[in-house]
Length: 292
Ligand SMILES: NC(=O)c1ccc[n+]([C@@H]2O[C@H](COP(=O)([O-])OP(=O)(O)OC[C@H]3O[C@@H](n4cnc5c(N)ncnc54)[C@H](OP(=O)(O)O)[C@@H]3O)[C@@H](O)[C@H]2O)c1
Image 1 (cartoon, helix red, strand yellow):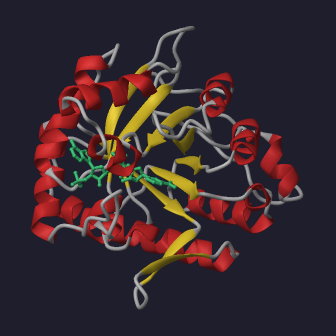
Image 2 (image 1 turned 45 degrees about the vertical axis):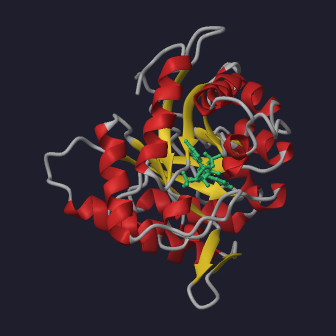
Image 3 (image 1 turned 60 degrees about the vertical axis):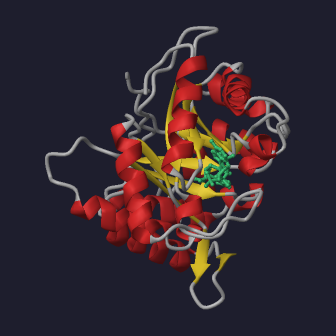
């Protein structure tokens, strides 16, 4: 896959009053011609770390999570998405990566900042202060061994304009993190992220039951950002409520997303090897440019 051009932009320099930030925007996915998409399937690791889903499933035992990761790799998945706010997810992924033989094919590790995990209450919380963000970066680097992509986790527009965030991203760059993204939940934040020139990835929710951020595909494409789609099955609701064949429901769910023009990744979120096999098959059946 070609790389989007490394890129610096004055936006963050303006936010930071010229003092700190110039960011490179690297990307792993190709920027393609009109009407063509290059989309791969990645594995979202939220549900291996904390209760999640339409049915609120509990996370699997650690050995089952390792088996799921092995299975994903055997199916050709090379992109994983975690976050400090996903409970034990980073720890499990870090332990798994550490145990892999050194000559194993690389896994692209994507995590986030700005949502943290309270181990006592077992709940996520938000802290956008510079020191909290830097602590989170240090902890993720230590836990995971490397971070290929660091995403700002569900910021408000004001967070993206904050000097503390810019300084923290600048710090992340000094720690060797090469690429940045934003996981947005509103279109205003998507616009700021896309126009900033600082980010290579835009993550957002999109599925048959939630199309509120459809415009984000266009924004990302216009500004040459890769897209990461989360909740492709609406946290499982799409399969739980289907009255027809499950395999068809899965294909329709992926096809619905692939009808948009974008390059990037769709994150399937499952704790089950069997479900992962089903999802990989469905995705492959409908992906116009198969490139798992
Ligand atoms: N940045 C953000 O704000 C944000 C928000 C949400 C998600 N995310 C990311 O996106 C990833 C994917 O989101 P998601 O976990 O909501 O994905 P999803 O695929 O929409 O939903 C996952 C749920 O669907 C069920 N499921 C998946 N495949 C199935 C199948 N073949 N048959 C039956 N049930 C199936 C899973 O249950 P089983 O485990 O039993 O298979 C799980 O409960 C997350 O892991 C996370 O990395 C990011």
